[in-house]
Image (cartoon, rainbow, N blue to C red; front, side, top):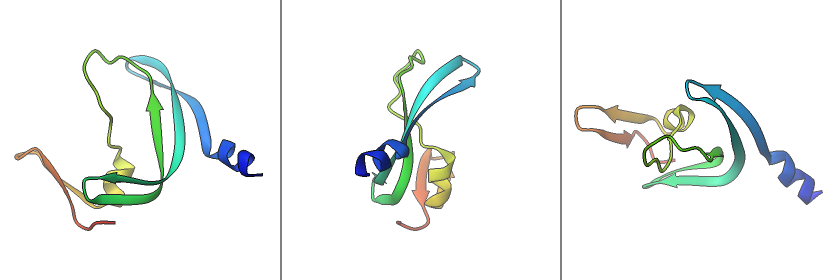
Length: 84
C-alpha cells in the first residue's frame, strides 16, 4: 500500500505555453523552506527545459500567497508577513 500511495502523489503531465509544450513532474513534499519561511505538505514541480538562460527555479503564486509574501519591486526584495 505504501508504494501505491507514493505513486499517487507523483504525477507527470504536459503543459503548453508561449514556448510550446513541456512535460512536468509534480511531487508532494513534506515541507519546502526558502530562507526562514517554511510551508508543509506542498506540491513542487520539475521540468527539464532550456529557456536560454540560467534558471534555478520559479516561486509559484500559490507559495507566495500561502506565506503572505510582499514583493517590493523598488528594492527587488520579497518578505513574508508571517513565518509558516
